[in-house]
Image (cartoon, rainbow, N blue to C red; front, side, top):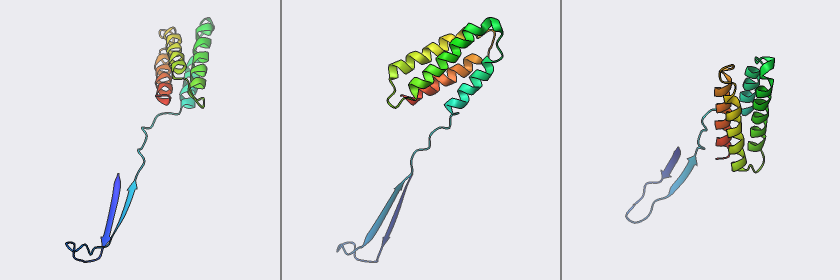
Amino acid sequence: MSTITITGSAGNVAGGDMNTTTTTTTAAPVPTPTPDLATMIAALHAALDTATPEQAQAVDAVREMATTAAAHATREAPNRALVNISADGLMMAAQGLTSALPAVLPLARSIAEAIRRMVA
């Protein structure tokens, strides 16, 4: 969005006798609101907390992949390939819990998409 303000005195435009002042203001684009990465990971952990003891290894894999993916994405100079691989690993780990914990896969997908956007 730009705002232009022109003020001037009456004068002869043909003769070039016109004073003007121009002010331009450009607003920064408003980012699309997305949940905070930490909030999404907390929601994922809450969903994983409902798992049975038999699912412990699969749950640990999802927790570890979420933590790893987030750590790679939030580095000062993230490696895009490593972030994408970590996001894929998170999705693969979450797919193993789809039937037992249906809320896990959509949460993992949201996290994977968020970290991919961070390095795009």
